[in-house]
Image (cartoon, rainbow, N blue to C red):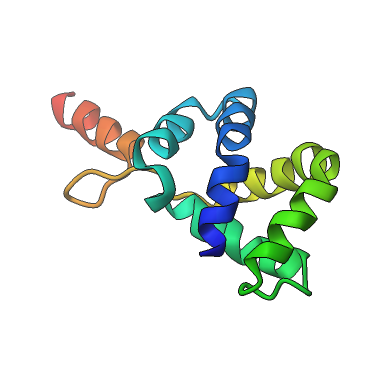
Length: 112
């Protein structure tokens, strides 16, 4: 339920911030997947640590805390969390488990 609070309150901010960070592909993934995207599980865990009183269960408290702290959440906390998430996202791989860049190098070396 807390993930829903985060999604409904911060989804547009998440998309905007990802775009501003140059994470357009990730923003599109988040937009397409909606609440089921892993980023919302990450944010739920992060907010439960940031707001110790919330502890992952008190959704009303979380909603009120985000509203009260809106400027800090959207200008400081959320951007930092999104940077952490983007840095930890593994590069996309092919069916063979190769990163896209490795696949290109393999193809180039095979053709020479």
